[in-house]
Image (cartoon, rainbow, N blue to C red; front, side):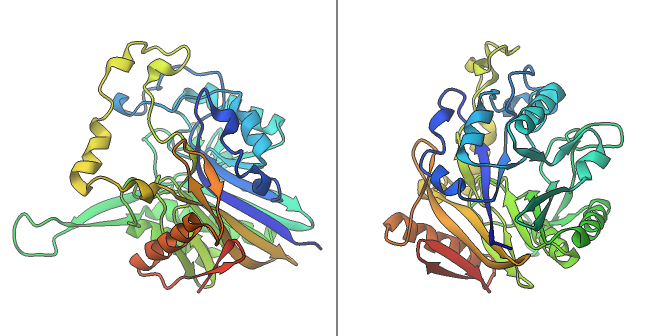
Amino acid sequence: MSETTILGVGDIILDLDNHGTAFDRVKHILRKGDIVFANCDQTFSDLGSDPNGFWPIYVSAVPHAASMIDCVKDAGFSVLNFGNNHSLDWGYEAVFDCMEGCRDAGMTPIGFGKNIVEARRPTIINKDETKVGFLNYCSIGPAGYEATESRPGHVPLRAHTYYQQWDPQPGTPALTKSFVDREDLSAMIEDIKALRPKVDILICTFHWGVHYIPAEIADYEREAGHAAIDAGADIIFGQHAHLPKGIEVYNGKTIFYGMHNFSSRGEWTCPAYQPGSKYPDSYKWDWTEHGKKFATFYGEIDPDEKRSSMIAKISVDKAKIVRTAFIPCWISDHNEPEAVGAGDARGQQIFEHFKFLSHSQGFDTKLEWDGDEIVVSD
């Protein structure tokens, strides 16, 4: 039995017109992976029309095109998650067309199904006599994107938020607390326990997190991540926050809370720029209100905060994980990732950044250079 390499990256949001070069500086690495995962925050289809009504109109929907499938396939990706808060931006027709197109190209879409039974069904990939299982859960999504017994959608892992007064003085900002929905948590644990004896490596991917706020990891993420590992998960890939987040080693298993954008447009485009949109005048609208609130409450984000990304690298030998590491990637001004090593100042900056992000959240995670890769341990 030879060693199997599993690679994983965060969010992909490809540019409508210039996506062909998105992975040029990393595909030589991605193509070496036996199983290569990514979260796709858009549907690769020419079908669908306008934001379908689930999102408030000020949020818009991510432009999409079927030609993006060729770009993603060429880069080396093999497992694509569509169980996220953008899966239905362009309706059911678009997402099912996208998933079919991915299968036709030899890739495996996960995280979305025709109903909750299909959505919860795990994906098992056999590679070099090693069975790798995937389960995906989404905590971020408009009401209506989650699957039910009779409706397509993603597998929900909803969370609830409450606010705690920590100082008796009135008007003092409250602490933000959160916890996982009990029914969704029980369903997740049931899924993991059912899959565990069927695979050698079990990967849970979570679309979760506090977006656009540096470092912060919510209570519910820790609760869900720990519960998943306690139930039998080996590795957790977290996405969505559009910023890098810390890394925790819990009971010997690694949780990548936020792998950050990998190739992401980095800005929203109004529906007017999507071919066939029902809102051709939307380019005149003010789309900045939602984003401005984060800057008002938490301050502007340092541009360098957005530079640190990664390719997680999981090495498997004899059906066991023998090494967990990541390849640091620098996000360019054009939102394209470039692998950088220990001899590059940018690589050192990413190393220090992920160390800070992890320690700032109370994790004792150890990061060490091994060649041009950063090994994760406790």
